[in-house]
Length: 536
Image 1: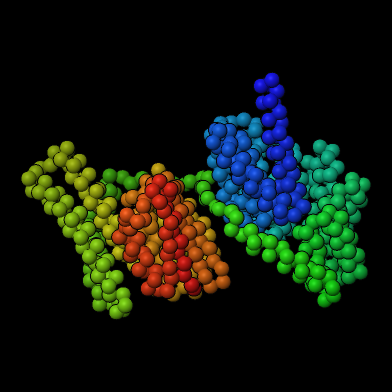
Image 2: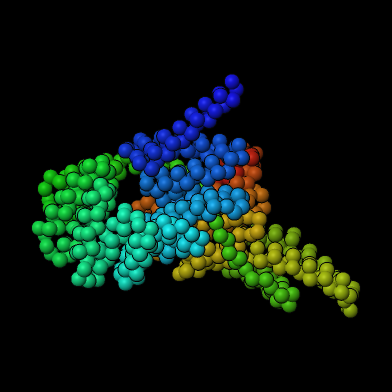
């Protein structure tokens, strides 16, 4: 009896998964995507709770598809990469390899949607390296070809489409043959090859025979493109009308919009109004669901950022650190006469903090090291080791101090920010940065850049000293003239009512001085979030 109940429950669960899978892969409305999204979020959490990694990977793969379809490309990317992370815990198997190929393809399509074609190619190449099935090769090669097509590298695209077509011939896969033949005809048309139209028409005929509606739609659109480029308006319009009818038969809003957007370029009739109404409705739905998804960024492949230094190099850098500390003090004194009146209070706070650090942490250690040198004119190996260790510690702290007070390169501001954040990317702490180039930094005034730089610096220092975080994500976003930087870490957090770190107070002051703002969200054991807002 119990076995029957368990079997029935398992069957019901599988039926639910299949139902929401269909909603995700073949949605009929935005409500389908929202329903599927909610289900697979719960399924992911349940799978992780029950240590069912395959289930969590499956859920994340579908969440990535839903998020991409909804226009949330960065969230889609995060879900796919999180799934790749989980796969790494499962060892090696055909399931792991096949799923990696699927996720690499998904990441390639996301990157292409974000106009990051080189990155897309790198993902497709990763998939190609581990693929073994002809169908997998066919899909990957096609995807690479579309990147070359986007880049108008038509000869490269032609070579890739020809490879895919040859593979489909070997497999006797008629649907793939038609698709590859159509793509070949399309790129041949771009190259003005004589057999382009023949390839396009043969592909369409095959698709009609196969009753492949989506394929027919693609063929009609490629034929429209072919005739349009040759100013044959009659045949171009005929194929566009057929594409429009096929889009309605498929009940695909995205296909309808694509067709109507082509009409918009040619006409100003009621179809143009129809396009605007449909597009406005789609944008409204997207706006209503814009804040449903939360992005957690993971980095799949972390490269080493700093090379190992020899002991001799360390000695020189340690001595250089002492010099940097002196330069830092001189810089602070110089700032006293240069800053505007409304920044004097902040400068005094900064000077006080730096002076206390140098007095309490640096001067005493330097004195101790000097005493060792005076007491032991002929240093033994053990004392030499102690001396080097001491100098290393002094160097690291003076480097931190000098970094906190050093100026920034406004002309190469993004490089300065990357360098600042990369310094905290250690073996036990991963710092993920996304969208740093989205903001037009050339339009941001110098004094705002400095305030933003210092605020991020304080956040990273706070993370390093207090949070015990293992993962930090920093996402840059922009909307018209309003810019936002989101900082999230998975550290221990703290009770805001009990303590407010001095550095975070400084960050608040700095941002308010330049007309911006910074908000914090944290509680003990729940990590830490900060949101920086500013206008260009």
